[in-house]
Image (cartoon, rainbow, N blue to C red; front, side, top):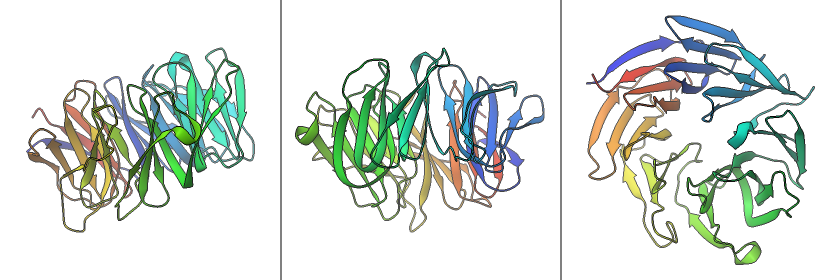
Length: 329
């Protein structure tokens, strides 16, 4: 059995990540805990709403009830990137060349590395953002679809329409597909092959009993894993049409116990699956072989993150029981 180094924190833990080889844990109360030769704490926000890792430079980007967007380094130092008084910042994305996107109300904002900020208004409230893997392009999820904006050029925005509330958005690692999570317990996707507007190729991924709150791409983008069912639902994206006409894999099936978080290993097609009862399984895509990484705990798994080597897995929960699993043990 892998060894688990536990960490008990107060309340709901939103996000965990590795900054270099330092595991960090962000709580909804606004504190960032680092395990760096002992536990160290940074008071970041009075109420944390969103926290993501910026993979380009090993920092966290955070948004809070105080209207601030912060960049937090592995040593706990804090840089303020934006401050919008009396607004809650719950939508964030980190992009190439030091760009950071955030949203409030019906506008997305992109802050470039030189500190300049560009606004992209929408007709509906922005629910989620993601940067394309190549080129400065952002996708803004909203009611009835997604808008694609080029950053830094005057290209017209592209609207990808599909009825319903789109609550999350992600580009595939190769930039060929765009997938959203929906309020209607489904995923929706578009094939970005040059056809836009009504001719865009749609992908409907339905049948979830609960809302999908966690997505993870495999290292080369061949698979997209998702939560929202009593198994991890893993869609195939290796063919030119993605999952259209294909059934997903169902990994780590447990009767009536929902998967709440999924995280692909950084190098291998191995998926970490976190459940609502705190259990964590690792499952290999090739043969479905399972390994128990953690027995059930106090709270549902809210976030998992692999170290760069893939030997350590940090996990967080809504009950505050967190930790780091050493799978090389």
